[in-house]
Image 1: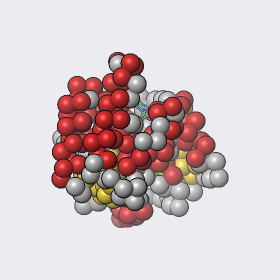
Image 2: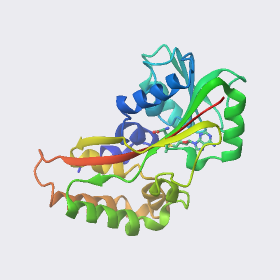
Image 3: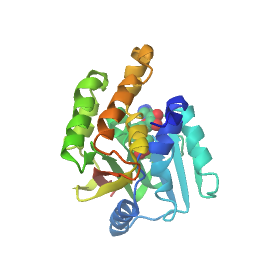
Amino acid sequence: MSRLFLGASHAANYAKFRPKYNAKLADRIVQYCRQRGANFDLAIDVGCGSGQSTRLFQDHYKKIVGFDVSDEQLKQARLLSMKSSTISYEKGNATRFPVQSDVADLISCAQAYHWLDHDKFHQECERVLRTRGCVAVYGYGNCELDNAEAQKILSHFYSYTVGRFWDERRRHVDALYREFSLPFGNYTRDDSLSLKMELNLDDFIGYVSTWSAYVKFQETYPDDNHAILQRLYADLAKIYHDESSKVYVNFPLFLLLSSKQ
Ligand SMILES: C[S@@+](CC[C@H](N)C(=O)[O-])C[C@H]1O[C@@H](n2cnc3c(N)ncnc32)[C@H](O)[C@@H]1O
């Protein structure tokens, strides 16, 4: 197993190994915004992390601002968006967006809504959205592997090896945000999309290393020194044994859409 990612910061691994959102998702959100009569001047990405979710909109909006509470994540986001003249990043908390009132045509929040104070987030959306502006909350659920034996090994790692290190809010992701809705107009959800990836085993293990439960496990048991990940790698390598073997991964996407009347 490549040990490269084991020395890198969590944010650097996040930027490198987390799934990238695809054009179909951007198109679906843009289609909704068009139907609602929104403009395409400014998009705000809340909890932007390393900017995967911010760069998604670069072909659609004149200006995009991503913000996050984490300096480390923002550092990665800026590095990866250096060439873009339309994207900028700010430090900020979702309890008070770092932008003026009545300016945004889209507010997006990817894989972060379950971490937020929802009442405050909704109040801030009301304040910052222009009339007919839209909110898109989305994310991806647990990944599905094409090989049943590999899926069993991964599920065991998820639920038992690092199981008790998941924050209790993770259950919302497991449930694909089914218990959430958005309190603005024209609320709808779309569960028809997914992210499909073909990874080599090293990169797949790199992705698992970004799980918050895995990071917490290592913080709690530093002496483990990534041994549990080495074991997972060894178990999966019995299935994906040669270098050219690909791990086919499907992430179900969930998308919640709503607009200001
Ligand atoms: C799982 S990451 C998602 C990052 C990115 N949106 C993506 O889709 O890959 C969640 C992000 O939410 C940020 N976050 C958590 N609570 C926040 C808050 N109250 N305000 C702003 N950002 C927050 C974290 O720092 C983290 O970068």
